[in-house]
Image 1: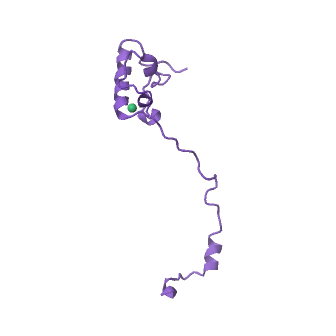
Image 2: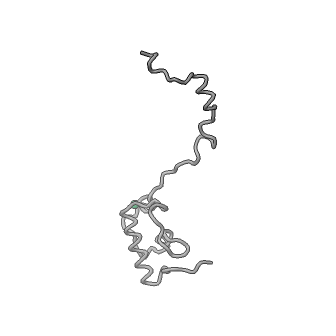
Image 3: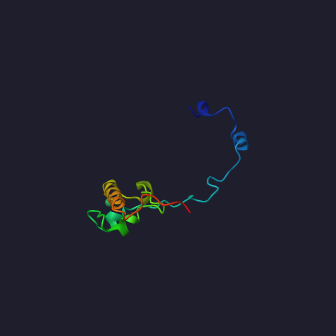
Length: 102
Ligand SMILES: [Zn+2]
C-alpha cells in the first residue's frame, strides 16, 4: 500500500528542488491585531447628544469629514447616533461641513 502512494520523485531530489526557506521572513507576526472597542459603549453613554459636541467632534476628521466605523471601531447603533449628531451640529454651525486642506 505504502509503495503505491510514493511519488515518482525521490525525496532527496524533491528537497533539492525546494530549498529550505524560513516560513516567515518578517518575524512571527507582521502586526499585532488589537480589538477595537466602541468609544460610546466604553464610556457608557446610552444616547449620543449633539450638545456634547467635543465628544462628537472626536469622530470627525480634521477636514470635517465623518470618520467611518472601520476606523473608529464604533458599533452600528452608535455610529448612526454619531452621524445624526454631527449632521445636527453642522446645521447649527457648531461643527464645520468642511475645512480647507492646509
Ligand atoms: Zn457602541
